[in-house]
Length: 99
Image 1 (cartoon, rainbow, N blue to C red):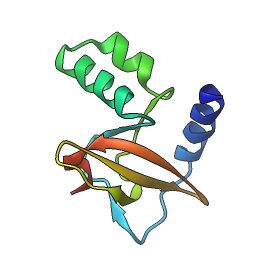
Image 2: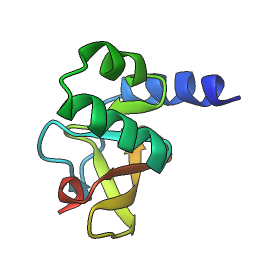
Image 3: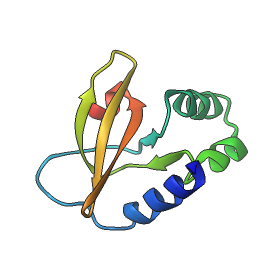
Image 4: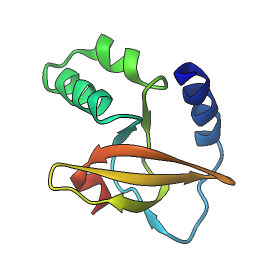
């Protein structure tokens, strides 16, 4: 099921963002779970390119330039709703991505 959701969201991200709301500024990723975000951040800190690539487009997605709204603002991590075309998905991001 997670694979189906991941593939579906990856296809959504191919659609151009819609103008109007806040937009992610910077090269950030958003992940389906807090744990996936922690794993991606850990891989980035350790410069583990293979693990980051393994997570990308499966559990974590590039969200640069995407329209979003904040669902739950946190000090370290926030949950946002990312919009693409007519769809949206909830993702966890580093808090600074949603500022």
